[in-house]
Length: 361
Image (cartoon, rainbow, N blue to C red):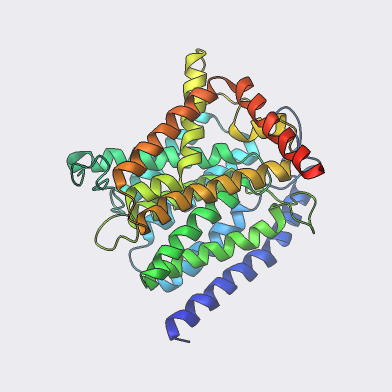
């Protein structure tokens, strides 16, 4: 085993152990101090659950990443700390949406401008050659980062969904880095994967856990969205791209689709795009009769397959224009169905009933 491989394995294990050990302690303190998420309204979980996952996952990541990457990490760390702090305040005091939104823009500006995380080209999306962003690189990147922060935050509605989504996206990127022997970025990816795995032990429903005992919280979902954007931009751009921008679009397809679909539906109804409701993608699965665990598993499977379409498609030489056309078609189909949530739910109900009937025979 090479020294680099040993370091990656050791730090991944350390991130997992630290997170898994610190979450019960942090959750216990949160419960004693009243820092809990109580059921009611749109929140259908059972009991008071501490939204303390992000307060462990991202400090562990920042400390270990800063240890192995002391230079060039400062602006990302600053933006993550800002979002973790703001998210924790929101979990405690439910701060106004406009303040939370303004902080998201500040965090995005930090990583894009002084942090130099910018989308300078979108690849050969339309078969006419590489599409360079030019002067649009900075505004496009800032908007993309803010969009993804909100997309992951809006997805955090089922046990294991936001954390599982982040884990799957980062897994595909780590696989790309491993195949191209990009050990520096692979090391950072494996640290956050280890930390997320330690969190999902307590958040994802599995045979040994009937429901989540800790939530990611706004502190975690906001920071996770930013970190995904940082990795996706940096690993699809020069000088060391490990995949194409269209593959990244497929990795993030469902979160982006659902955010665009919800915004389009709310605006068409004359509502604010950030108004909360129960018409997100995961709500359709619940109203179709799936349990929260089944719904999360189904959605995470869709996200994994979306990543496979993009990443494996590039590996197999599928033209970028074909992947682009399919992605755009999926976006408009999702927006169309999001504008008709009852039809969406009827389709899912038929699929569930058909699957149940097939299994019973």
